[in-house]
Image (cartoon, rainbow, N blue to C red; front, side, top):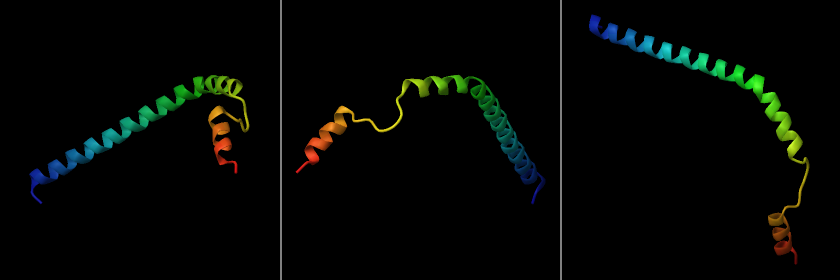
Length: 68
């Protein structure tokens, strides 16, 4: 390998390493921020949406068409 080729390989590795580190930091920061506010959002959504099976208008329409 020539010296120029080694330098290019080294710069590529450095670039990829820096991108990976930056991505990890961004993910950790986003997760930490979402963890703090995510619980309030999850509780609000859980309170608004009823749990269990619901017969909605489109489900009723399907049941009507499926009857013999």
